[in-house]
Structures are given as C-alpha cells and as structure tokens.
Length: 469
Image (cartoon, rainbow, N blue to C red; front, side, top):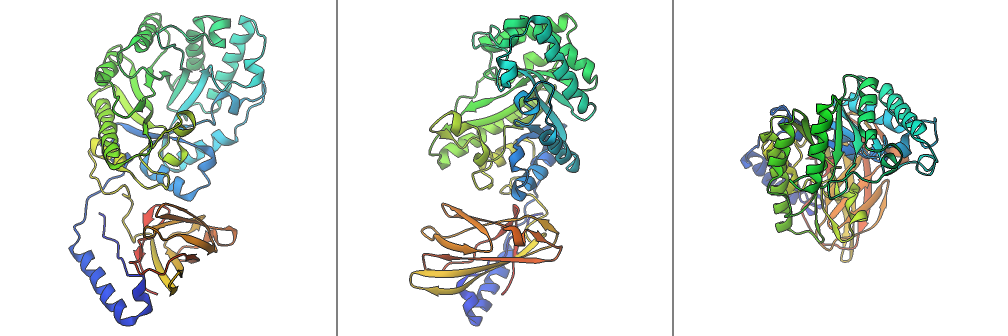
C-alpha cells in the first residue's frame, strides 16, 4: 500500500508556531489521502506468466539508485554490451569474464533470469576477428569455440540466448556480413547446432530489428526460421527488437508475433524503446505510454510470447540520442530515474495499478528525511538535509525538487547535480557507508531566498517520511 508522504514547509522550521500549523496540515493530508494498491512491473508481469526485462549497463551497477530500480522492477536482465564479442573476447583466446560475471551475480542476488546477448553478430567484432583472413574451416572453428566457451561458462544459468543477431537486410535477404562472406548461409544453422551442444537447456533465439510488422524483412526471417526448423535446426525462438518510433507502431504487430508463434517457436520482445523528436511534451509522453501498453498487450495476447525487455529503463542511459540526433525520451524513466507515463502504461497493461512508479514498501518504510532551510536572505538560502536509513547503505542517492528558478550554487558532503527542478545528491567517499538506523547529512546553497514547502526527499528511489528538525 502507498502512504502519502508527510510534507513540512521549509520556512516553518524557523518558527515554532508555523511548524505546528504546517505539521497539522501535513497530518490531515495523510489521513485524507486515499491509499493505492501498487505492484512493481515484475510483480504485475508475473501474474500473467510473462517476464519483464531490461538491458543492464555494466558501468551503472555501482549506482545505488540504478541498482534499486533494476532489482525491484525487472524479472529478467540482458547484458547491454558485456557479453558481446568485442567485450568478452577482445583477443583471440582471451576472455574477459569480469563484467558478465557481475551481471550474473546481480541477477542471482535479485532472483532474476538472464537473457544472453549475443553470440554471432556482424557488429562489435574485435579487430582480430573483423580484420582476420580466415578460411571457412577456421572461421567456423572460431565461431564454435566462442559459442562453446561462453555458453559453457554459464551453462544452466542463462535462460535464453540470442545466438544469431541481425542477420537480415531490409529487403529480407541475408546481410553480407563477414560470417556470410566466409561461411555462407550455413553459418546460421551451424551456430544454432553449436549452441545446443554447449547448453542443451538454454532456449536459442534469432533476433533482429525492423521485423516488428509484416514486411519484407520479417518475411525473410519467417521463411528462414520455417525452413531451418523443418531441417531440424534447433531454433527455439525469435526476438523482435522493437526499437520503435512514436506513432509508428505497426498495425499488424500482434499478427506478426502470432504468425511466428504458429511456427511453434517462442517469441520475445527483446529491446523495446519508443523514441520521439525532442523536446518531449505531455501529449507525446501520453501517446508513448499508450504505445508501450499496446506492445505489452500484444505479447499478452500471443500465448507463445514469453516476455518483454526494454532496452534500458532510464533516458539517461539510452543509446537513442547518440544514434538518432534530435530524438530521445525513449524509455519508461527520465534522466533522473523518475518514472514517466510510459511506466504506468507498461504496469497497467500487465494488470498492475498505477501509482507513480515507486511501488516499493511505501514512503517512510525505509527512511526519514529532514529538509531544513537553516538560513535565508533576499538573494539566497542555505539548506541542510539529514536522512536516516532503516537499512544499511553502501552508497546512496537522494533526490528532491526545488521550485522553478531556484538553483544550487554550491554544496558540501555530497556530489550534487541539478537538472531543471530536480536535484540529485550522491554520496562522497567519507559518507558512502551508513549502518542500519544511521544518518547521513549534506547541505547546499541556492540563489534565492524564496519561501517554499519542503520537498519530498527520496532515498535510492523510495520516498522518505518527512521528519522534524
């Protein structure tokens, strides 16, 4: 159940009489505000027997806010880059396991399944492979060794693998990749057979983009999967990346998933995001929410669709702006890890109840925060923030909002950033570790002496109860 957060006016902390009035008003809001039954994305998805997944960026796993959302909201994780060939075998015969192992440990700690990505792909090949002069026998051996080594290490631990990734041109013909140039079309069948031998229990997928509707490219994929399965090639599933553009969701999206499912394979939405021309606005974000919901509903309507993975969850970490200049806002959380309408679109489609995207144990369950304006003058103010955490912390992130026009000019005991009205404070070295029941504090100065109500402070994504000074 969600409880209303207590809000105490910042100015009233300077006056005992005002504090009494502010606290009384806050208490009334708690009593009168209706509670809402909430579910996380993973809880909602589980009721339908589907998974909800996200791509995980290895370099973000040290961020407590990122970890908290990834662990709470998703039942499946995919390595964004850590399992691609250039990352995992940068030199022939030399494998880097540190980042993939971190993902596996994260998934195990949070009872999540793992989606392996990816084994055979034309892109992100290391130089030794991309530029090497190999005959067909050696190229096939290199491919088989890579598959057996990587899948063998994680045998029995990874549920699904993208064995072959992005094999098609837009016209439905096979891409003229190095794999195709040296091995011909047989490289696909060979890769799947090697994968089956490496881990007989993993489900083996072929994955591509722009195959979301019925078109030339998806027809090429359909024909290949049909033919290879008829030949006994162990293709268990087809992944639809679904890197979509706002208002361009194919009208035959569900029908396309269904026709592949009718081949007897599992289907998965593997890399979902919905980008838009920037800047975003309320109308665009609402349409985006509806279109995320439509994708989820399509999966729900297809019995053999086992789940939906979003390609990252925060716009801060999205690949879109760097690849499509002028476009962005493609994911269910914004740059500050706050839920957008798309979050509730996904949640509602899975049967959950919207509640703003913070469906943890409820505000106040994990922390109490005191937000105090310690000093104020015409052109500035000094604010002290003190947070008491119920559970031990190894790194923390606190977020809150300032009024429009109020800007932070300096800070102490924190690494503090501001984007619009949202302020994000992160620990520094000396206050990163907080024992259960312990308190950390930080402060900052602003450019305005305006009086405003104290904002709700969130700790690692969960709103805190407002305390008294």
